[in-house]
Amino acid sequence: MNKGVLWAMLILVISILVLIFNKGSVSVNLLICEISAMKSIVFLGFISVGVAIGLLIK
Image (cartoon, rainbow, N blue to C red; front, side, top):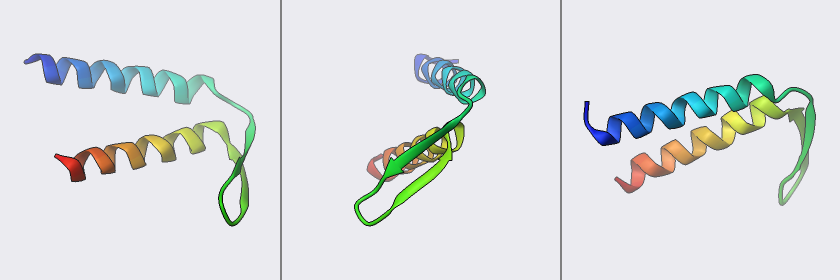
């Protein structure tokens, strides 16, 4: 395995730990509305958007 794959796996493990240990609710204020959801769902959404942007840039 090269360094890029190892870094990706490390970031994946850290992301999974953050998703597991963040319970509770959070309110996200968007430009046009406010959404209340579980913290882990919000983090997963932000991670997904980041991955999609990274894939589009690459």
